[in-house]
Amino acid sequence: MAKIHNVKVGFFALPPATRLVDARHGDHDVIELITVALTDETGATGIGYTFTGGHNGAAIHKGIEADIVPLLAGEDADQIAAIWDKIWWACHYGGRGGPMVLALSAVDIALWDLKAKRAGLPLWRLLGGYSTSVRCYAGGIDLHLEGDALLATVDAAIATGQTAYKMKVGRDNLAEDVARLTAVRRHVGDDFTLMIDANMKYRASEAITAARAFQPALPLWFEEPVVPEDIDGLARVAQEGGLAVATGENFRSLWEFAETIKRTPISYPQPDVTNCGGVSAFMKIAALADAFHLPIASHGAHDITVHLMAACPNASYLEAHGFGLDRYISHPLIIKDGFAQAPEIPGIGFTFDEEGLSAFCVSAQEHDLRS
Figure 1 (cartoon, rainbow, N blue to C red):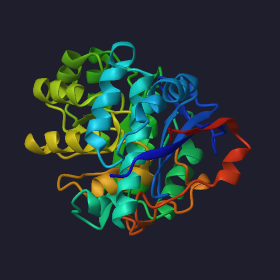
Figure 2 (tube, rainbow, N blue to C red):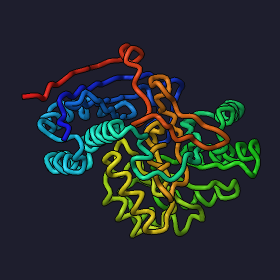
Figure 3 (tube, helix red, strand yellow):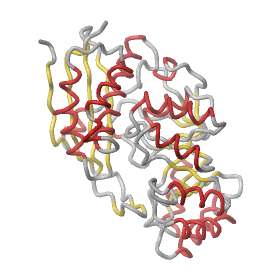
Figure 4 (spheres, rainbow, N blue to C red):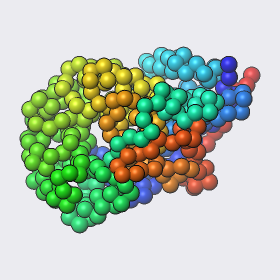
């Protein structure tokens, strides 16, 4: 037994390294980062985080401080499933599907980091281990770019070792998106993997039209063509658009993935460990996809998700996300010839640069849970 003795919660407002634009959210002026550090009675510490594109960070932060921290008092850090269930049901009535799930995700990640560190294993090995590397792609947030600026962004991704790139679509003028995608395909050649992401821009009929227009450029998948609530519309796009569909970054539970997999012919379920319920939920979603003979893809948080994907026999592509925290962590993701390397450092394999983050700190509080 290893009781949780201390919880430290941080809230940071980070400036993006470059301009980031997508079809539904527009410009991302700030990235809100919420961190959790759990220390047990042995002195070992596990860290986790979640993030937003600029809104609701305060609600997530407050949810951890006011609602979750008291629930951790006296808990055995090894009993992750019991803690997850306790938090889920305690916060269910007011928080189901909202900021509390992101808060729970950050805490769950920290618990798994702590467990892996105490075991002396990298998280992917603790979770069962499957491969020492995972295919990955660069997730561009580039709707504002075209021409040479867009091609330069793709080239920059290739220079880091990437052999796949996802670009944004969803401009008001479909012809502009088609021209942008066509230009990128011509630039990288037919053997290079491209994906496209609409960030929920379209209604189903519009998405079908767009998908058919994008077909000649041979994208591997068409991501989030419609809002997550429109399961029937998503099914229509997957059936009539002629492109494989990926979705899931805005699903907030295992059960949303279950309904979507049962009711639609999606090709790539795509959870985000920082908002689906953490490591515990992500691995259940991956197993669910495997039971339906589907590959799992990932969204965001590549520094953590590389471990989860490396533990999945049905892993397809890890997203190296445009919101990445590479500037603020000790061991950023390593990519070689299109594959992200699974770290061998115990736990999730990095620590935060607290000095670097301090300039953007909104709040940092420590809670001593010893009675």
